[in-house]
Image 1 (tube, rainbow, N blue to C red):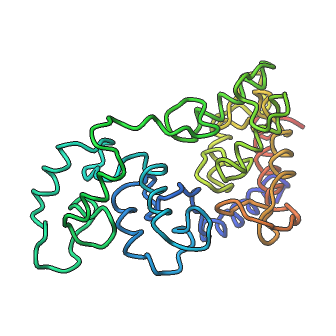
Image 2 (cartoon, rainbow, N blue to C red; image 1 turned 180 degrees about the horizontal axis):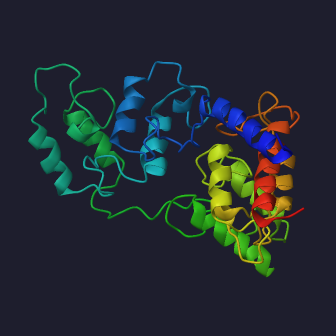
Length: 303
C-alpha cells in the first residue's frame, strides 16, 4: 500500500471516530431551547425553570435568577417590550387582541398562561397584574426597538455570521478597517480575527462553516471550494483563516496554533470553545491536513 493510500485509510478511520462524537453550535445568549432565536418559548422557560439550577438564567451574573435577569432577557436579548405578546417587536393594541383571544384572563385554571397568552410577570397567570407590569415598563406604542447593536456584526443584520468574518478578512487584506479594530490597538489584523472568532462568536479558527465546531465538515467545505494554494481569492468558508485572502498551509498553522480544547484533539472535533483548557498535541488535525494535501498533490501529479 503506497503512502497516499495509507493516508486515505487513516483519514477514513479517524473521520469515522469523529462522526460518532457530538458537535454543538455556538450559543445565542437567552436562547434556552437552542432554536437560534430568543422568543416566547425562552421567556416561558425562564419562569418554568426559575428555581432550577440552570446557570444560563443568571444573565446579569449576580448569583441569582431574578426579575432583573428576565428584564434583560426581554428587553436586551429579545429586543422587545413587556406586553409584546405576539413578538412583532412592538407593544400595541394587536397584543391585547392576541391575549384576550386566548381566553385566559382571570380564568379559574391555575398556572395555565404563557407569555403569548398574557403572562408578562412570570406567575403563569393572566390578570391585571400583567398589565401593570407591561405599562410600568413604558413600552406601549413606542414602535419597534432600535436594532440591537452587536459587536462584530459588521453587516448589521443582528447576527455574527459569514458575512461579518468575510468583511473583516477583506478589510485586513486591504490594510484598512475603520470600525473593524476589535481590540482597539489601532490596527486591523489577525488579532482581530481571533477576537471575532473566539471571543465574540465563541468558536475556533478553522470552523469554516461557523457551526461552533472545528471538525471534518470544515475540511470537506474548504477543500471542496478548490482554492488550496491557488492564486485566487479565498474567504473564511473557503479556507482563509489568516486574513491574506488565500488558502494555504499557513491557515492550518494558524488554526492549530490558536486552539485550546479537551483531550489531545486540540480543538478538532470539539464543540463550543473550551474555557481554561490546556493545549495538547494536535496530531489529528495534522493528519487531516496532510491527507488533504497528499490528495491534492496526487491529483496534480506532483512528485
